[in-house]
Length: 255
Image (cartoon, rainbow, N blue to C red; front, side, top):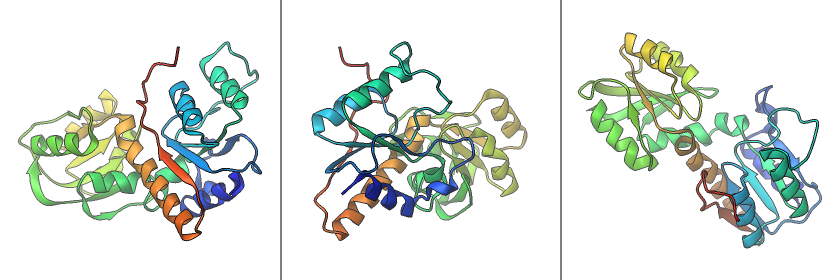
């Protein structure tokens, strides 16, 4: 298959024209007509991820977070992103980013996070989701459940004995979405990053914030897309290797 054909399959699951105006999703590096027989899914394009793609023999990286989020006037080794872009070009690697389009998509980042939180009767639109726990539990117990499900540190910013039944969420840096949790009668709000002043506002409204880490709240949703793409390729009887990155987001660059 070609890069364009893979783009088309991703577009069917998370339409690129739904991305936010500020976003930079789509084909960012490469040639739409390049042949692809190996795809690596990774939350971010880092030096370690590029090395991983080269070692696996992949021709395409599908990331959640885009490169060139801000316009560039130079492409040199003088800065971090410039070094990454030049290395991608030298390695003849293609990059597709699925960012805010995947955040919002049915079955995308936030629906996956809701499932990991153990929520049922999930509703919502845009980036926000809310749902119910099967049984009420204390905030302390819910924090432990989140730690197990997400595999990362969870900061509970409220009393451990407060009871939680309805939970709102928005992955990544989605703290500003908390007012939708207030509007929908939630007892708690889960996000990757929650600023201190927002946590104070939530406390004033008796909502418990849970800060679970940007990476931890988004990686599983990207891998859900990888699995959906693999299933689509299987239906097409296409011999394609689809990999999920095994490197840490914060891995040091290779020597």
